[in-house]
Length: 558
Image (tube, rainbow, N blue to C red; front, side, top):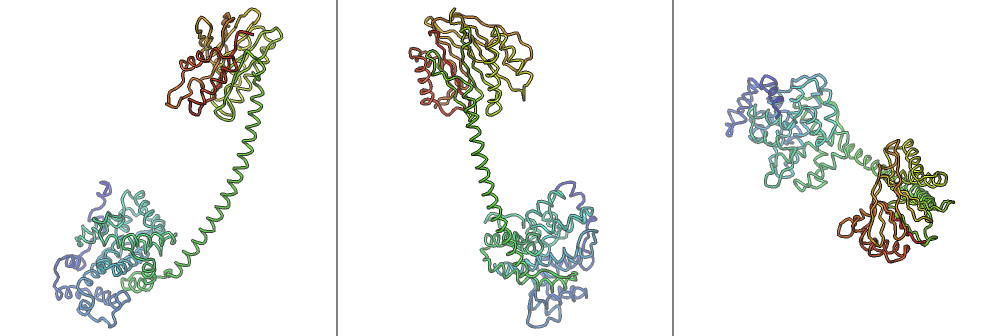
């Protein structure tokens, strides 16, 4: 129990049995009781005598003959039954005059009586201690009223708690008070010095125990709480289903046995509540509960059917939208491919672009200017999918358009960078390698903006030309400088990081070194054959890519 709550939970904070009531509780807690002395103590309280005789002659016990005295009642029902009954009346007397604004005390005591009778009927079904079960059931939720005695400003929440089934109500109590009625009730009974069997049962009646740790009285109280919820909960169907499930799990009670117990409750609750001087108006009967449960199940089935139909309709619409979107993406992919040249038309150039998704953020281009210069580029847009493909289309279009009218490669790249920077969205950028090749003078002009190193393989060795500046679209003003190299006897390779980061079956990345090994191994093949060999090797040795793959090969020989 939290310290802050414990401080409130002192004898002066709650009603304490006094006088004859306290004497009766102390006497009932003895291990051995003298029948005559017990009857004499009870007889000193005329109101208690009247109440006990009313209960003795009620449907709760169902004696065939009228009980006219306490001695006669003890003889007929037994000493243990009388002790349990006296404890119930004593506790009722101690707390029966509590008045909390916003808290329905009458409903609370009716619920307590219903739990007590349910516990007694369950105990009779399973061979448990019926008399103790009645008392424990009546006292099971005594901590509930104490919670509101200690914090009366929260009483307006009590109807909501009562309308819920035991499990959600238990969680709501914990949230509202920081503690629950079972802990409070067990401590209260210890404070009043009631027998340990009651405080132990109340403390554990919301917890399923392992077989060896089970307390039959706690298990009975758990079911009696569900019996009461079947009559009071806003979701009676759920309470009934949980009751049948738990009864079978704990005691192998059949559904029919559970229904027999529930059917007996209304009449016995009405008579017993009257004997306990509990204000009682009306209650729902078992047939109405079953009707409500059947109606709820029917509504749930109808709702389930409606949901199933709606789900099927939604899935059908989803499939139609997906098919339409897939068709649109196919068209977009066709358009994207049309922006890139068909390299099979050339003997000295070959390239492929394999998207990880429908659309690619990688791109390449190749065309010949009027002055004979061959213009080419390869780039990688940050991100994937539709947004990357749109930026790819913009970049490749700008390159082709500007290369046709500008006099220097540096001017082309600078203008592309400015255009991308002005319309940059969500921080997207482009790594980009562009080149112009003067075939007449065998002179190659290159600009690498944040892209992977360009590779040139010649007879004399390998040349790698790294990035010279940041990617496009990040910085507004950059002065790009062309790198000029002689390109007369070798092959140039442009590629995206999807290729070098491609993982083989053993989980290792291909890397630049791995790519170089492949290029050197296949360099004697024709350009188109080398490209095909690399694609086949990728398919054989690597797993499915998670990034776009692009490779362009340009041979210096025409």
